[in-house]
Amino acid sequence: MIRFDQVSKRYEGGHEALSQLTFEVAKGEMAFVTGHSGAGKSTLLKLLALIERPSHGHISLDGQSLTKIGQGGIPKLRRSLGMVFQDHRLLMDRTVFANVELPLVIGGIAPQERGRRVRAALEKVGLLDYERQLPASLSTGEQQRVGIARAIVAKPSVLIADEPTGNLDPQLAVEIMSLFAEFQQIGTTVLIASHDLPLIKRMKKRVVVLDHGRLVADVAAEEVL
Ligand code: ADP
Ligand code: ADP
Image 1 (cartoon, rainbow, N blue to C red):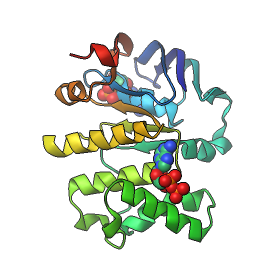
Image 2: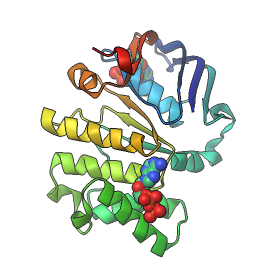
Image 3: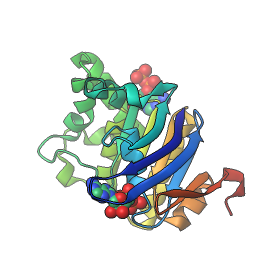
Image 4: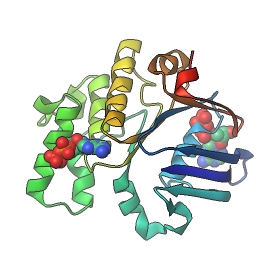
């Protein structure tokens, strides 16, 4: 599903954020990417979402080479790949419904179908009763759930998340991670960057470890202690 082949990324004027990274995530697998701050976790996810481009190497998603996707193809890619951010990035002056609906509006989905899908997504994250509210009236954990609903509303085959529990207390963090695991259970491939090792260990999923842009360990779910 996700394949990195000898991928390196050097930012302009910077050192190498990722060095010759090779790994695969199978369809329907859930994996964590961990490592210290600056290890390259965000960069890895940004390359997948085409927010950044690699300096060397190849990335493919579902057999399609990302290299071949130009600026014009990015909206389509974003529908097959949902992204969740640490700071949720919700539009604070729009309702919960409007925030979750946004990818479908951009995708040109008809209004009636949009309503159905938005409610299905809100139901999945347990926020069906909140659709008329503004994000500011929600708790931090609820706001993050809205961000997740927005990421999955177009039914992406891949869900990626960058430190999705970074702003949450431990109890809420576990709930959010369990929600990701539920999406894996319905067939979604899930890749989560996190530096919260205790939480990662609890989840018992594969863990890919980066250090200074290099892959230094790849621990299978069964081997997570
Ligand atoms: P992590 O998510 O593991 O903290 P990042 O992928 O954010 O790591 O960063 C990896 C390295 O790339 C760091 O050294 C960081 O300073 C550098 N970096 C990240 N983004 C940029 C950028 N836009 N320009 C220059 N250097 C960057
Ligand atoms: P519907 O057919 O009404 O769209 P589904 O039960 O198939 O309903 O899905 C309900 C919601 O669950 C979707 O809107 C979407 O948010 C989420 N969902 C379903 N399947 C997936 C999937 N494979 N990946 C991510 N999200 C999904």
